[in-house]
Image 1 (cartoon, rainbow, N blue to C red):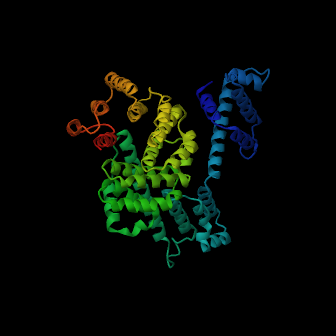
Image 2: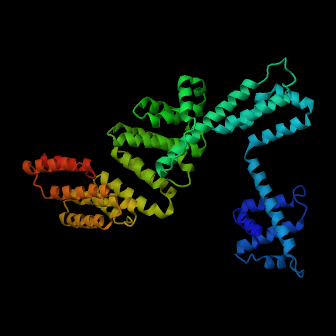
Image 3: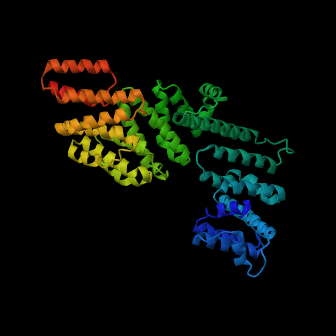
Length: 477
């Protein structure tokens, strides 16, 4: 097929069964299409795609026009026209999902036709006239962009340009434009910073410091929810030591998260969770409860459930924090309810690893070892953590022979995988070294225990340091 035909096929294969049916109705409407041949071509291509039959242009032509010699010019025209019509169908479908766009187009048409009686009714009942689309719109810049465009149409409908004795709606036009701009600038910046942290790309901060400084001095626009939430999100990230910014952000987020588009709500929730994780890593353990409260809110409000896939790292973080807080029943139910939201390739390993953690925290080390045996150790995201948990489980069970084998296997893994960062390998090598000595230390041997304490202090970086210190003190008791 030619280039246009290839684009047509690429578009056709994206239509599901329902879309294919409604698109055919669109094509059969004489208002949009008067060519029956194009309807026949649409049906023929659909049948061939479903049956995985050839889409060669000569074969398609032969099915449509039996006995007629192939005309490349005509076939190109058919595919070009059909491609354009399907584009128009998709535009119509998209328009049906956007009542705000329909309303604006209607008001533009009324302004062009200008039936005086209808125009007077619209301008008298303006808020009601534009209210229906607003009732279903999220708290995004689109909401204020719609109001800005609607107010500019009102200005034209009311003919304020010639009715200069009346007060025009310039304030409404200006304020909605300002809010649209502020929200979109802050939202785009916040999203770009989230991308920067995860992918190490750098983006410009044009006018962002000036906008933040203005909003700090003049709180007027902070009465608008999206302006306020992105304002506090910025301050939370850029002034993390001032925890009042996080508290303001968290309050708005927990109360209003469902008013935002899913993608925006997810970005905001991720920002709050990342802030909590950073605080926890700096020793503020009270932020573990903050993390779990925010994450549970995202689940209970349905936001997390609307995402196609749950990030395995977020899945694991939530479980680890909940386990540290003793929320065992919640963890078990969370794994059961949301495991199918994990990406399929990582699902089995993620579930087995987290079930192992679930049993480990309840000191059911045998069950934990059973689940760890089903973890895919070729996955570098889980290998280090799984081997660490296995080492700890065998230590807790006094299974010294298995523990020695685990030490050797873990050391061999670290020596073999030189691509791992040197500091990271050292972290786990120190864990192996210290735990090996712990397993050989006689309880109550203060000389040996003090020597170990000194060694831990000298090494500084030891994986699972909290667990190591706990085992050390158990031997001292």
